[in-house]
Figure 1 (cartoon, rainbow, N blue to C red):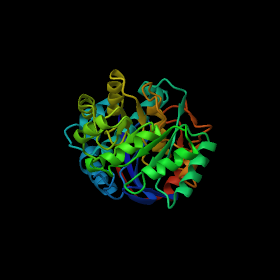
Figure 2 (figure 1 turned 180 degrees about the vertical axis):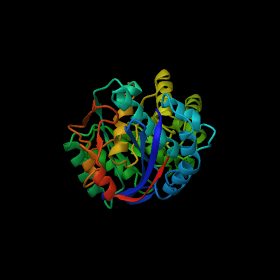
Figure 3 (figure 1 turned 90 degrees about the vertical axis):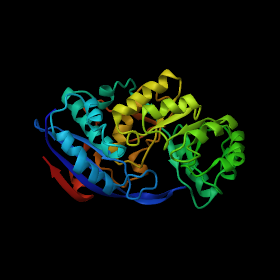
Length: 368
């Protein structure tokens, strides 16, 4: 794959509703959209999932732009790429900056799949034609408001409900949901809001038969999670703590979790996401694909990785219409009875809508 040029676009899209977690509230989405065009005129697309503020992880839109412009893009333009796996290796000596790396590598995967005339799912080794998906519900002003959202999600057929929690919005909220919906697939996501001092509080969640508790403790911890998992019957799922297959190996060895959330941007790209998937399969650790409020291009990448056989739990890839008045792809991602039909067209399977993209572009730059 010989690259003609790379275009970075700083995008801004308004969310239909605010999304609140223990980290804060998001009203709109700033992100970098990457387009890599080959000398044959084919474009590969991907998104960086880094946000404006360094709250979920340390990366931001500005730091990603800097790292891509000054370090990663020059490396990528040095010589042709035969296979996308080479991109991860080419970037390896650059420490961290996983989301920046993932965005460029993802665009190369899309380009590669299109050149091969196959879907991105097939290029990754995916085996599913349909994937089950769940929904992630943020912290609300009242439990009554949350229950309305749960009911709406169930009516739409989502296969799993994830509820954000934090101290003061946890046990009583989950109890209320369980009183109304005693048997729905339900999980809680803490986004690192607790410490081992809260162990007795977190242990109270065991009575609710949750699928898992996601990242209850510090964003960079796997030691205390191992101690917590010993005290809980509910499986712990690690999210923020996992950046690589090596992190997963250590977490499994320590007994830090029983489930892994794979986010493509958080682990540095699709190639490493595949390696994590394979390692978890070998150790009977179920995985699922987490969401980062992606627009359509990023959502398409999530769909593709979820077709790998080890993704046995519903992910966070809800329909485009849940977040956006208009998405930047045609057709938009749709969910029918909690299921997404995987596109079989070459690459990501959705066509970026250039008119809508330009409308939402704050700034762009071409690199050749």
